[in-house]
Image (cartoon, rainbow, N blue to C red; front, side):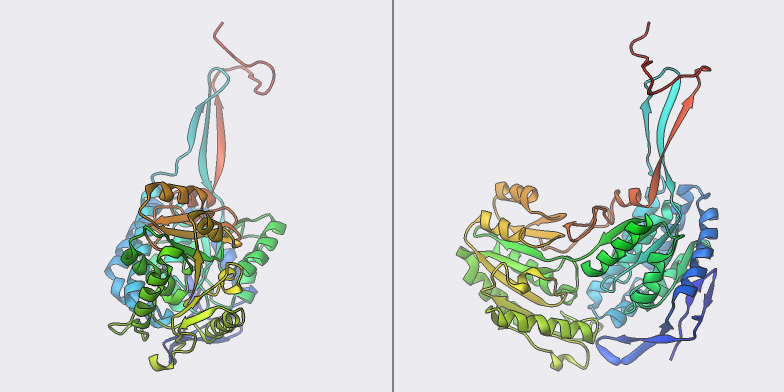
Length: 497
């Protein structure tokens, strides 16, 4: 069995206590990918000490030169795309068609980040005083703690690390314990591309130990975390107490609305992809399907027929539509919510049990509930699995109200032939992202990503906004008048005398 190590202080090193954990293929748990370090506070402390040295050197690189490193990262990922996708599917389970997309999103993010090295804009503005110049510009912050989930093992770390690096920060990176191999591959690529070794630190381990040590370390001034809302609350409390800059990306309970005037075939494709792509393990997954009464029965019939035809299995085998859940704990959680849906009186139309016919992995049948009320737990709480709740509504206003009735606000979708309703949806659906005639999943690397309410804390991943999170604004004044000019005193220059 292969043993992997942390990357700390410019070298690959074993954990201090010599303890490792196993990384297994969720489609075939007897397939052990390798052993990875069980790290703790000592390893994180060394990583931070090294990252601070790396930061002091890296911040002095011109931002376009930092971008050039990310350009090479994109080139390497492009040349190794199939290999990385195969490793990711083995480790995480989703089909190759999805992991290829995961790699492509990392490639797109690398190329976008490389160009942003030439676009870290500030502002120049007129001074209120004569012979004085006023401007703002962006500066790096320091060491960034990067804590990532399992569902996008390559894409999400790139969303976080690439902007942080282009802005001139160093990173301490902890991948989810379910996908440590992909995290290792990414760090290897960064080093191959020429990133100075002390700028990136890789610390494997559990969230409650290594992750907590990163969040609590006093010399990590900014944290980017993606995970559950409950864990995000704990991270937020710690960072607030320690005055850290924090970006939280947390849960979702996303709805696809299908109205009476929708293209039903198009909406059907969107519902299947949104609900059961990545086995429902996306924060943007479609977990609620809001159907207007005029098309409800017809659409449910179409959806059932297509759902029952989905093929479950190993994502590395041709023809697989839906892979396994990430681990046994996740499968048990889905089972609990299926029981809750039945107890609350919803009609389970298909699925609802382990898909043992698909293999020895953590497979679960795609599950659809009808007659779900908006306040049912399966319509309110994040399940993170292949469970779809169908809710019947009469009007557009009711559909919008049901969409907005949850504590999350990440993604939403509306299928309609009305341009007026489409623009109403953009304005009125209480989400960070709204799609028109497209599913709730499908973010693009060059646009901001994130949500409102308990989905996040106001920051965005991706696009141009994330570069503001990873940098500080500094203002500079240059007075070349040769005299003392006192701003904020009653001597405003006004019009020329």
